[in-house]
Length: 191
Ligand SMILES: [Zn+2]
Ligand SMILES: [Zn+2]
Image (cartoon, rainbow, N blue to C red; front, side):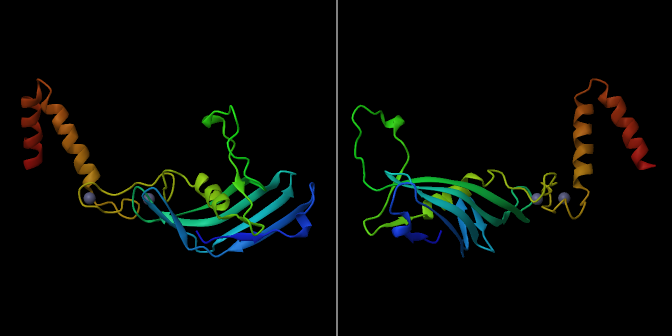
């Protein structure tokens, strides 16, 4: 994701000061696991920055329209994400807190020495959190035919019926009366 850095000014100089900060990021996309996602319209964010004494608290939302490929049929899958941003930027690194377990560590970032804060991670992790693990073009996507690869949302290649018939035949062959039934079936098919 493109870096989004905001320089703090006197509007946030005192504890209790808060400042709305909305904006747009032109972002081409991101990667999550094996998936590549495109953001054709970038990301829009709507945040409130608050001087909370020890640091700047950033809360709000980030939203975007996401394009990826369907996990079942490989066609384009589109969805909207609305992620919640909640990040604390401390003025001073508190260092190691004595007696605190590593698991207890509170998640925070730091205000940079030039009085700016880097919102990139906060925005991108909010988007990643809301990106589904399984991406489908639609909930009932029929997927691809395992025999010929046809997209079953668009065409019926007939293999599904054929596979079902074969499965039925296999079930009958494991039946002790299969020999008799098999004869009847092939008689029918020839006529
Ligand atoms: Zn699909
Ligand atoms: Zn097929």
